[in-house]
Length: 458
Image (cartoon, rainbow, N blue to C red; front, side):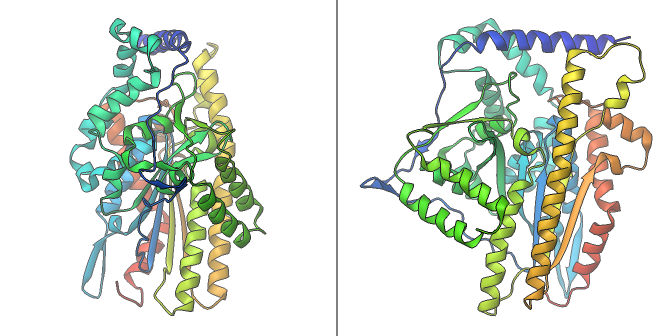
């Protein structure tokens, strides 16, 4: 039989879908991204790019998957473990968290990545209170059910996603913009959504906004996270304007990339998709939804980053400069496998159960393909660079619930749905499992051993 709690959640979700379907009739959209502040004779220059990070000899790339608050808590536990891991060599000590260069995140994982990008190690003091232990789903449902919001939803540019943005902006990200994030020292944070026009991932980065001739500095972080987690139907797409004025600069950059990677089919496909943003007449507006649709692990963008490292190492070898030796990709994968739960009862699965299982099956297959692709690229790049005279050591680490040794805990996690509400017990268990899985990883142990016994200092 269906438990009372499950029935209540189903009724609440059904009410939410009914109201959202009604308010979905409103066709107004609020555009908040702004064009570059200065353009000379229609030629806009992207002056908001981050300065090139000094990698040192360690490059640590993280990706946080989708999965609601489940993914946010799981990735938070991994950050805790990295913060508590000290690496000492020749009198110098660093926490491994300080070595993180880049965090790519989608959907639920984007909350943790964005919060860390804005507030740094403050995340370890208040993130649980601000987000992880809050029933955000209940708050958003109550907002939709509030009659005071109905007029705003139907009669203005305030759509159903605006309720989420309003809450995230006020209570989680404290009205911060990407300008605030870019001004901080720390890893590059990349929040990913899905571009409905191309089906590819869309990055909230200075580079991607540069292709829109748009200023990311004034764009709210809350809106990017809302786009990254905007599950279709439940939330309206987030729309940004594709401004004219920078087509010449964009075309030049794309041509340079195309020539370098013309023989790599996948990269050629990425470049072709990016080139569509230069078609300002046909692609005047870009509509964004949940990043998990294009890449639920947030790792496809890692391919771009590996290519950047390729250039850095290549130039470093030419100039006889110190370049990265240890290249680490750490994937925090919060996907679940709940299919076995329904097979314990003769009760037919409900609508939401069916939708959830079908979605999980598709995501699981796509995730396997993505992980295999990125791992192969990392290995091949490392071999290619090492063969040219500069040794590079690759470390590919994926943390997922299937690697837990305790079947009881594994079943417990697989029963946690994708929502923005968790109990205190669930948050604690997800945090601790993130830490435990990282510590028990064979490749992670090898990484720590190699870093503590390396031949060159910091």
